[in-house]
Image (tube, rainbow, N blue to C red; front, side, top):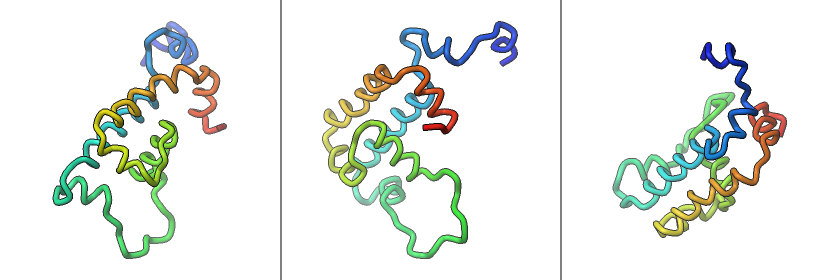
Length: 123
């Protein structure tokens, strides 16, 4: 990390390098790949049960700042997929692959300042 400060490499200059992806887009893509894989698993498999399970007891006061469900919902929204019907869409492997690969196209349309504003929590 010291070389970034020493050479004054900014986030803006890194994001302008052609072919270099930002970390949020990469993590969103990987999360959707895994969620699609789990959605296609059989109903008796433990990962699928954990992904679609519901806890009947109320949570304690307050909630975690970040949950897997919240990040999955954000990733689905970023990819342009309806949150309610994503599991049916994920059953078609080729269709889901197109959705996941389409995230790179969405990233290309986003300007650098939008990425920085989103990271800063402005947007």
